[in-house]
Image 1 (cartoon, rainbow, N blue to C red):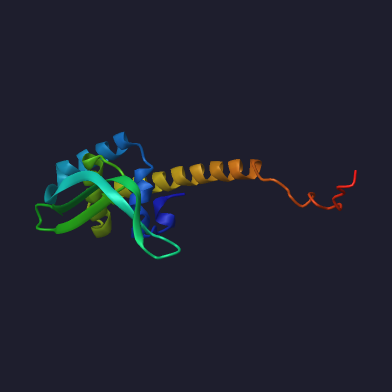
Image 2 (spheres, one colour):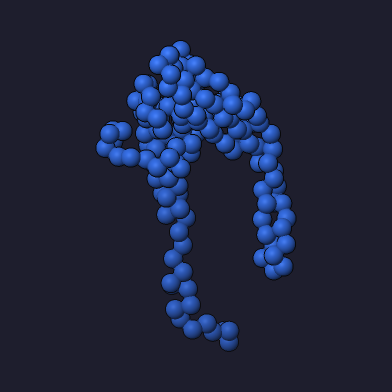
Length: 159
């Protein structure tokens, strides 16, 4: 499937890029950095976030646990005066990946030169996730149990 055959919603971009090997992400981000000025609007950060939930019985909040988070917010500009912003928040602790994906977000959203490479990575991530989902479905099908045969005869405890 080629990138021109479909449009992927922006809300899915980070998930799809996250499925691509980090070395590929860093390579493309490095190439983009050669053509654009990339400034941090906020310094890329990583840390732990608390995962809040609500108790089902009393509706009181509690924290299930901690998850690693990395976030970045960048401005991408070129010599012609074009300036766009990109951002990323990931369930990951690598700020370099978050900054690279924030750059991808801005470049692809504004269709800046080089967006084709970023779009290719998006499609690559989509294919990777489709492969993983297919493998999960096969595993699920292999573990499926047919309970329809149980209890088809009346149980006899008298024996």
